[in-house]
Image (cartoon, rainbow, N blue to C red; front, side, top):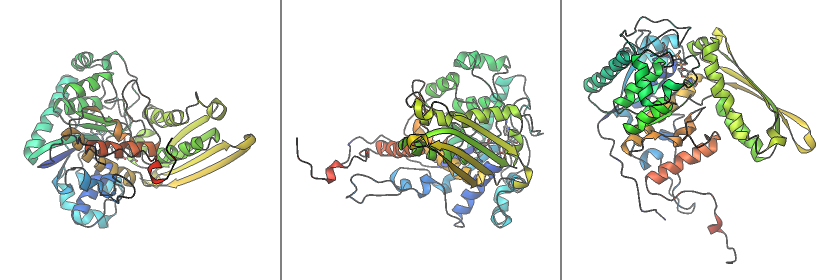
Length: 443
Ligand SMILES: NC(=O)c1ccc[n+]([C@@H]2O[C@H](COP(=O)([O-])OP(=O)(O)OC[C@H]3O[C@@H](n4cnc5c(N)ncnc54)[C@H](O)[C@@H]3O)[C@@H](O)[C@H]2O)c1
């Protein structure tokens, strides 16, 4: 049975510009991957938007279209890429430095990648201590720098003939910033930009510029960025979608699958020790304790939200949770993440789970960037401004309305995403109840 009210969605006509803040490992792996897919040299593995299907109606109806055929998404051929980075390397050089993709993937698209030259960044070493770059803007205050970003956005749109844009933060993790007065309202934030308030990090200037230009913004790092009342106010005022934060790719992805399993079976947890070795530039930046603190906060919140110790004190009231990231250059982008999980069962008997995830960070993150670009553009055309909770699926620290706890369980997030697509298209929600398939006596 079809619900009658699909939401009006503007068609994805013309080109969609994807503006990436940061042209490092994730960004170049994403861009190169899309180009290889467009040339028929690879499949979009890891992208729900491209490879996923969605069941519609009853299980007996057999309606299971691909998501891409069900909702009006921008075509991959219509994507245009732009980026900012304080390091002036073009896309090809940067991908080589990142060392994620092999020459057999980079060489055929070398010219394409070389044409992606980063625009000068708004960058300040006080916010990312382990980096240095020469491709940097200057201006008399933060407001002026943000205005320069707005000009970049307009010029890119014009130059590439784009109809619509989205912006995704794929840049380094900034130092930890606690929310303060300057983030409490848009007026305070804009005053703070004029006064060069230290609470305003470069990522916030990109986000402000993006929203001012009506461009949806997603935050792939754990920085505060759009997670403030000031920028959420701006997103609503300008009617622009926002999403964040911190791509959920490796260890946390696994954590948000295992923890709901423990809770579903009412198994207790006494400790969860997670450690990683990582040798890329991201690992180097996170070696700085202030940037690591930002990441740590993002990784630690997950268990508490899923396990709800306030509801289950006997099972989760005394959990020791530790997360470490160790910079270890020989591994490059190929991260190894270990989890030691101490659990307990019937009569309190202890058991252990050990996980050793030998993953590739940017290989896991790239399809998320693609999905976020496509879905944020969809949200914009469907006129859904502000926080996109249905995109929680992609984030370690998902944004939610202030009165709500964020949802961390991967499969609830997955259901939420698909139900949002059904809702957009006027299709029935899937509850998984299924009583209609059985003959129960009417009461
Ligand atoms: N790969 C993953 O699985 C994953 C998961 C979650 C979050 N992230 C986050 O995604 C981000 C990118 O990761 P990566 O591996 O590509 O890192 P990277 O170091 O390879 O690339 C980041 C790039 O951002 C640039 N940069 C820093 N500050 C900037 C600024 N103010 N403006 C423009 N550019 C700036 C750097 O010069 C660098 O080239 C990091 O913050 C990382 O923590 C990655």
